[in-house]
Amino acid sequence: MKKNNLFQEERLRIIYQKLQKQKKILVKEISTEFSISKTTARNDLMELESRGLLTRTHGGAILKNNDSDLSKEFIKDNIPFKQRIGEYSEEKKAICKLAASLIEDGDTLMIDGGSTTSAIAEYLQNKKNLTIITNSYTLVPLASGIENCVVYLAGGLVYDKHSIVVGDFSNDFIQQFSPNKLILGIDGVSASRGLSIADSQVPSVASIKRKMISVCEKTLLLCDSSKIGKECLMTVAPLNKINTLITNPSADEFELEQFKNIGIEVLLTER
Image (tube, rainbow, N blue to C red; front, side, top):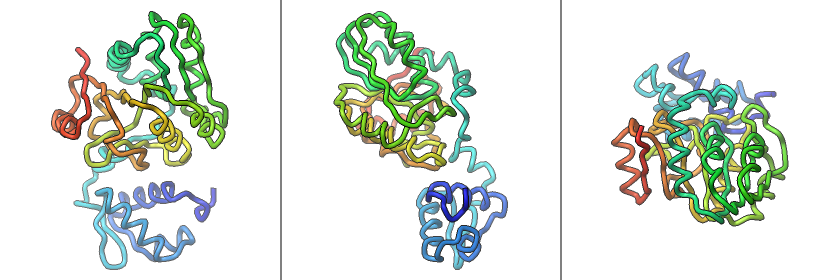
């Protein structure tokens, strides 16, 4: 893809990666590289500064605190689904088991695609008369095995990297439903930034998550402790859009307390 055809989030990622290497960057350099105006380049730096990544200077910006470890905390790698599915597998199973205990017979569920949420179908097998709407095509075979379960799979663009379906068709499809519960996965969640994902290359990944949140009565966020306090480049939604957070006990206690302070129910697994 040509650099002058990039989405802003894609451009921000490249700018930040360059900043990490060089420790400083100039407005003129950004303007030339991406064929954008200097005003747009300054706006990009303002956005990155608002996310706590850099300090703006006259004519450019410097890496905040010159902290080489900042990227590890702020941007998680955009790891493919098939690789992520094996990470923190025991924690994810415990999280899904606890989440399933909150599901009642007859519930209408929307289930987001993801390495954590994909495991929940295993723990819904004793439920009855569920309706499940999802954009995860790997979830369908398992969900179809639940007694009297009606399964809807969103249509649209197949994004094989994350084993999901995305795009305008998917968003329009999701808009037709009003589920009472959403099972949502995320790459990072923090008190200061809210919900964010690492995949900025395909903006529709974030947009379908936003659409799901908007149509559901209650949102249950499922994420292991490695994602608590972490911030990724693309914002999905503010923290107050979440009703319940389910994670494991090793999650950052300070972050969890801040979640509780704004009214989010925090549930911890036994391990």
